[in-house]
Length: 68
Image 1: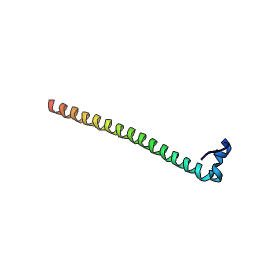
Image 2 (image 1 turned 180 degrees about the vertical axis):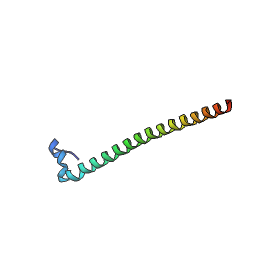
Image 3 (image 1 turned 60 degrees about the vertical axis):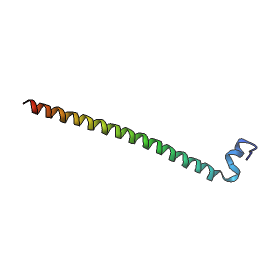
Image 4 (image 1 turned 45 degrees about the vertical axis):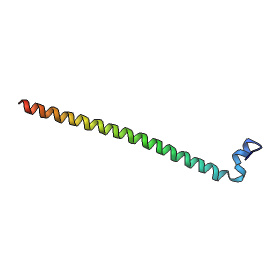
């Protein structure tokens, strides 16, 4: 489809409301997915670090009990 001007492009033949809202909804959904994945990844990494640190503290405490 060819447009004679930029304003005609933005108007989309009278369907601008549908076209641009579809683009906006799509990009917002994509942004939400990326952000959600990022924050979930950060949360999982933090939980894994905490779990590893806890296991190390438990091992250290058990070793100290064995030396008494």
